[in-house]
Image 1 (spheres, rainbow, N blue to C red):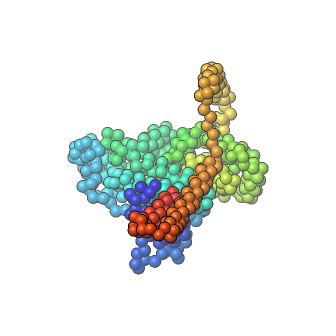
Image 2 (image 1 turned 60 degrees about the vertical axis):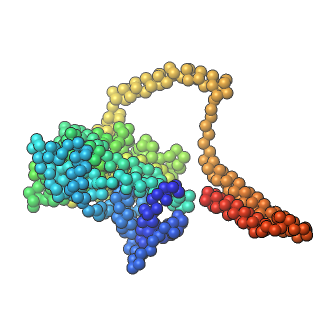
Image 3 (image 1 turned 180 degrees about the horizontal axis):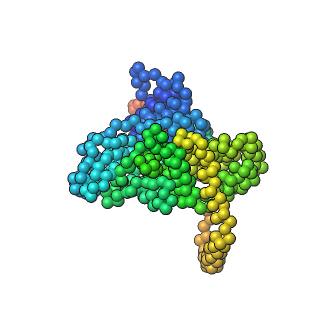
Length: 552
């Protein structure tokens, strides 16, 4: 950690200074980073704004990695309060576009061909610029109109540096700040880092886009751009140009059919979730376009959600239980989704769910927000220290985006009417006797396979035990604390021994000098000073070593 801190010292200083400026000086102090703060003249700490706004401004100032961190954190409404979530959802990338010559250089290096050999025309002015890359309009030699997304130069190195620093800071924070463990920030960061590294690789985004496009072709509710794989790499993504407008601009006055658009969009999204289990993870209005023929097209598949068949079936049961105000169904679904922990107090959880049922029993179904209801259920799980899977938090964010878009385009549409058929299909599939028999057959085959190899595995265990080669691994939760305590005791003992040695040496020199009257070589030397110097050096060296270890 120390080597990385020295290597990234200037970035540590930027982060510590930004934290201090936006009113988080207590965190800087608790992490022991006050010496890294660079106070700028004429710049006063932001203290008047709300904490949520200060967090957003802080992340925007620290750049792409931290903006992306905030965007991922905005999906975890089960962990953070609404005021922070609403601010994080407004995070913006304040980044300028990079020069066309760099764009040209990256494309030619990636495609191993000159720009004119790949494109009949290429617009030097970008359509949009973001933290990861920027988009240009172009035309292929074959005549198709496309958009080309090019990854920003050096962005991978910047993001990896920031990820290393954040990981170091979280390790420090876990030891010193109790609320870090409470909000599960380390787990959230691991999830965030994985998502961000995937966004850096345009090949993954291309695969996601193609998968959504192909699985949506049969129903035709929505579509996605076509990917041109011959012109796409890890740093360059070429896809078909969408001739349309943002969904918020598709108004009746502009000649569009908002109700039809809203219905197609919602059905398409729920089909992705409940039929295919693979869906767009961030369908905000900027990622939803509408063509002149009122066709909905999704773009930007850097973030996607995944739901297993079993999770989809349990989710359908949860939604049916929610709308039928059936606490038992909701509780069983949460157990089936493995959200509720075995050691949780199930009676207390059931009582909290029952209180939620009573609340919704007083409301008309049309008044119930699906996103809010799911959020309250996840809040109950979090209250009882149960971890909601990241796939469900991405789902929740997507459902929230769907509800907002429906409220804007067609307030009269009821989301329950759109989602109900998908839910009932999943429940029927769950109890389908043919599928149940097939599943039982597969499980029986797995069991027989396990039983077949069991005797051989037991023989290996017995032979290893006879040769005294049987290893047993133990996990003791307090082992790290025990090791830490032993280090403390050892260092303090070493400290005491050095102090004792220092005292004995000094006493021997002084007593020896006072008892002898003869002039010896030792007496003619500044032995007291030399002894004091050596002992002092050893003393300071061991103290520095102990303090540096952080275990004193």
